[in-house]
Length: 162
Image (cartoon, rainbow, N blue to C red; front, side):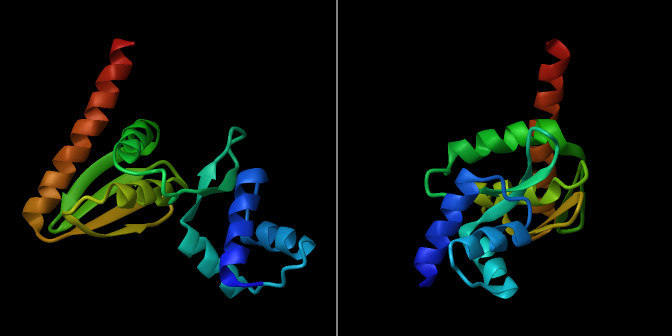
């Protein structure tokens, strides 16, 4: 099976089934007679923009994130919504903007920030509960910190009004 065919099948599986791990995905692919290595599945996950999100039961699952229809304002709305749900603290250190999240939410937040395409952000790194944004200089880091704090504060103010 060619790469494009395999990746199309992977997208279909992610949309149709609850896939919680690479092993789950490999097992489903093998049922479709697709023999695939761990390295190949990892590359396909990266290429397709598949991220782990939390489902209704609080368990992780794979989700397609980098689809063509998710652009511009949609990402900003998702960013604002996600900030409300997962951000704990925002700060900057020199040319880095650091966003602390609830456990296991940093990669999703970083993916959304990458989708918004902030020109100031040169790179995002996500750990378990921390997103580090690398920007050009300390001025941009401060601007990014202020921007994200405004989003976060607006959400907090909205909750207090409700």
